[in-house]
Every structure is written in C-alpha cells, then in structure tokens.
Length: 463
Image (tube, rainbow, N blue to C red; front, side, top):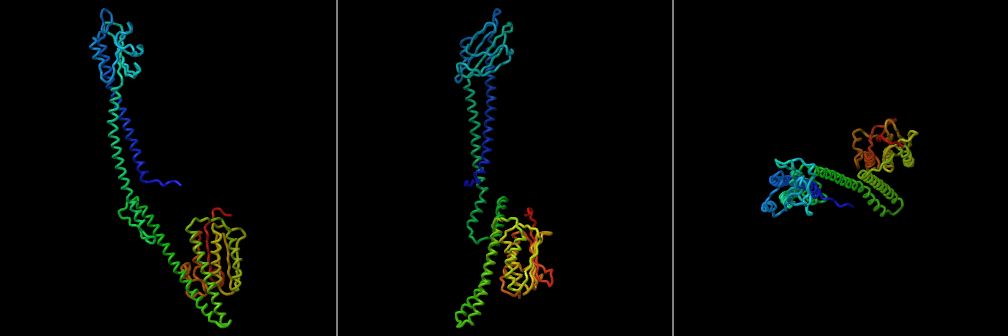
C-alpha cells in the first residue's frame, strides 16, 4: 500500500523547483555573459601588447630587426598572477626574439594587421594567444608577432563573478523558499481548522459546518461535507422513525401474545384453552410476517447503498415461478390466481430475489384485501415497455389514498385484516432500486378493484 503524499510538500516542490531552476539558469547565463566580456577585456590587452611589440619591428639597411632592451622585456613579462610569452619571427629570416616554444599559427591563413586569437598550450599549460602579421613600411618582408598569457586571472575573475552572482541568487532562493513555505502553511490552515472542527464533533452532531471566512477553494469541500451530513441526518432520522414504527407495530401483537399466554395458563380445560392458542398462533403469524417484511426492507436498503450487481433477467419466468408458489395461499381464500404473459422472454435488468419479493408483496396484498372467492390476474407485457401488472377485484384504493399507501406502516383506515403496512412500501423501494415506476389505478376488468403496474426501464442488451 503506497504511503499518502503530503499536499504541503507537493506544493513546495512544484513551486520551489521551478524557482531553483530559474535561479540556476540565471546564474549560468550571468556567468557566460561575464566570461564573454572578461575574455574581450583580456583579449584586448593581449592585442595591445602584440601591437606594442610590432611597433618595435624596424628596417635597417633593408633588413628587418627587432630591438627591445632587456629591461623592457622584463617589464613586459612581469605579472604576479600569470606568465606572459611572446614571439617575433620573420617569414624570411625565421625566429627573431621571444619564446621559441610558443606555437605559431599558419601564416598563409593570416591577413595583415588582422589579429588571430587562439587557445594553445605551452610548457603543458593552457594559454590564450593572439598573433598579428605586420610588415615595416620600408620592407616587403612580413613579421609575425605573437603574445600569449596563462589563464589564471581569467579563471580568478570567473570565480569572483560566479561567487558574486550565486550568493545573491542562493540568498534569494532561500528567502523565496521561506516565503513559499509560510504561504503554503497559511493556505492550508483552513483545511487544518476544518479537520479539527470535524474531529471535535460527536457521532450524532450532524449540523452543517460553518463556512464563514472559508476560502472559495475550501468552500467546495465544506459544501460537499455539509451535503453528506445532511444525507446522514436524513438517513438517521429515517432509521429512527423506522425503529419507532417497527417497535410500535411489534408492541400490539406481542402484548396480545402475553395476554393470551396468561389466559392459557389460567385455563382448566381444552375448550377454554383453544381460543387463546388460536389467538397466540395468529399473533405469532403476524409477528413473523412483520419481521419478514422488515428483513426484506433492510435487504433492499443495503443493496441500494452498496454496489448494484444487476443482470439481464426473464421477467416472465420470475413472475410465473412466483405465482406458482402463491397458488396455495390463494386457494385458502377460494381465489382464482391467473397468469398471462407472451411466449417470448421479457428482459429486465435486476436482482432475482428482490423482484420475487416485489411480486410476492403485490400478491400478498391482493390475497389479503381482495374479495373472498374473487379473481387475481398477474400479467407480463413487453410493449411499449416491460411491465408487470397485478389486478384484483377487491374494494380498490381511492385516488386520495393512492399517494400514501407507499408510506411505511401506513394502512388505509377501516382496512380489514392484520397487515403491517409495509407491503407497498417494499414494492416502491425495490422498484426505485431497479429504476422502475409503480402506478396504482382502478382495475380495468369488471367488476373493478385495484390494478398495480410496475414499468421497468428499457434493457439495452436483452436476453
């Protein structure tokens, strides 16, 4: 598992590294500019020295001579940092004065009075040299004057320039880095304050986080957290209502169980015991049915909150199998349960268990509240969209109540039977989970009743 990266250090690197690169490039550019101008200055001195020596080349009796007193040569060579070399040679007579070891350029490639600079070595040391080809006014003989100097002063000047350039740049880099570090810490302070504010909260403190004085970039985070807190508050409130309603619904049959159990304990014969046992069985069935409904509701909520692994299913086959299981229940109330579907498969995307629960709750309601000895018709259609329809010939549901019957634990006043008010709530929950639409209307078949239709979204890849 990779270690989490620090946002502070990422920002510091992304800001400081380009700054350091700019400083280095600026230092390198300053160094090469200074080197260029330093070379120009020292090269100009070399050229002036070479021309001074060239002025000492004269013609005597049609012969080219170079006459420089020893004291002048000593003054010319004196330098406490570098060593100076010179060489005077004639194209006709050859070497005339100076240092024979100093390399000479190709005279044929030189132009008169035009200096030629070169980097050569003498006595194993690198030197900078300049050569000037000249000729006395009264002679046709060419004379080459070369002057060279070691590079100590140049290197020393470059070191001083580099130091003078780099020290302010490094100081600037340190000051800028400190300023960047301080700015990043100040910029991240709202995030630290937000983390501390959230850490101080209890698990039940779901009020929105105050966003006054929060930067615009952090406000997007606080808005997202507040939206999540609002959803959590709604979920916890719904859960609290669910628990309270479930406890209330369980209290009535459990209280009846207790009373009838006490009655059974006081009974002296089988005839007085029979009604109590019958009521106990009925209450136990009611509690069992309620607990089953609660488990189905909890299962649908867990699927809704987690990843949905739906696959293509044949709605016709699911409905047919489910109807077969509910036939005995319908026969207990002398009801006729019919099934209608096309010959081809009707494909929907969903979860088999939840879809069976959806149809099971619709059939349970139809059997519970339908007319004794009546008819129930379950049909599956594919046009214009996949649709599951359950019709009964019971008393029906008015338009005023059709919007409330999907609420949890809600029962229409005066409704017979011992339902718990969760059947249609579960149907609506599972339908929402599948992106389906549930509609309640009056039954089209005579003599009327209730018709519940579930329209499923189009499946892009049918079976």
